[in-house]
Image 1 (cartoon, rainbow, N blue to C red):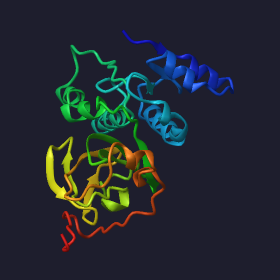
Image 2 (image 1 turned 180 degrees about the horizontal axis):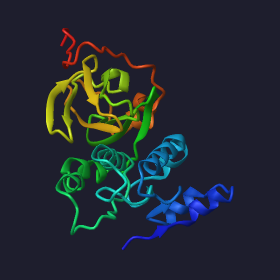
Image 3 (image 1 turned 45 degrees about the vertical axis):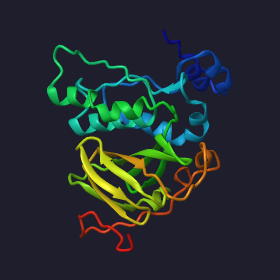
Image 4 (image 1 turned 120 degrees about the vertical axis):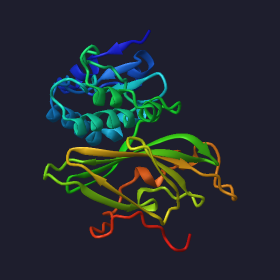
Length: 267
């Protein structure tokens, strides 16, 4: 049994500041924004709210108490296939409840596959329960990051979502080094695309990851931290002390002509 609360939204709507400390002691999940509608516009407004208010709402999310951006509308009528992938990926980043609204008797196979994606469900259900944050936003491209298990020597693994908010009819290449996203473990991270099931192998902080993101689409990867020979901390130190992935990022480097995965020759 879970206890869902709607009153935080009504407080916000009335100009009141919710007592999130009290909410987390009372509620398992709570609504703090508009009811979702069966449309891409509605999904993007929720994503925008969670990005804008992240410093206020993320600290109160954790195991047993979650921000609730409302139900999944995947498989209904308002979202395209790519947009449906975005909602599933972002709800996993948000550590949100996954409540379906589709008629399971008539759902199409491609949408059913999105809802049954084991990699995304594992991210959503990660035992740390830490809600992700937006770490980059520029020219219609957003990057979101969520700390997940395993944690090795005080270093988190991460789920990283590259979201393309553009609608210009062609995929957009995003090119970024791991260290530009704050992934600075010297032993590197094993990178796995959770939709395409592509294993990029182990990349190091100076290695460049390049992804092509479809219009109103997403690429989401799991970055599994690797064991380092030299201890780099313990517990959750890097996150609690201000892990760089949750700080403002400078503009990301991009090369339009090279669409291969580029590895730094020093590794």
